[in-house]
Length: 202
Image (cartoon, rainbow, N blue to C red):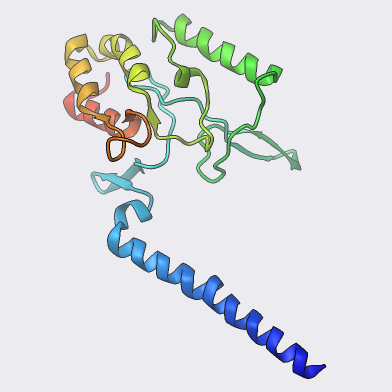
């Protein structure tokens, strides 16, 4: 029996070492050498302080900033650890809502977002990503259409011309990867940092 057991134990130990330790460490090392900034989350510093991460969406609520798309992340319910509560832009718990198209909660949330965007006068056209969350809940990008729809509201709050802001947005549109993959997009954090560099918020 020992002669049958020993090879099995040796294989378990060997493959645990290879796939559980050696391979992850090798990939981590390669990532740190080849893509250190992205491997570390794309952290962005201003004035010696980390202001955000290029790869993780965050909330911008002020009228003087471009807004990100809604977030569906959650956190443990402080009253009941077996349940969760909505906690938008919770970077410690990346997740989508998994709500189906017939979900009343989803329909109510989308309708409330659309109504608030129109009521606040932020947009005249609601792009799809203005009212829907991403699969991760932390998408750092919005569509060029959503960014352009916010120009007039941000321009009013900043005292800038629509034309100047349109040029800024267009400068920050990222094209498809290799010209083929994905869709054109705008990184909200990078756009807002460029906006602050152009003129401080009021």
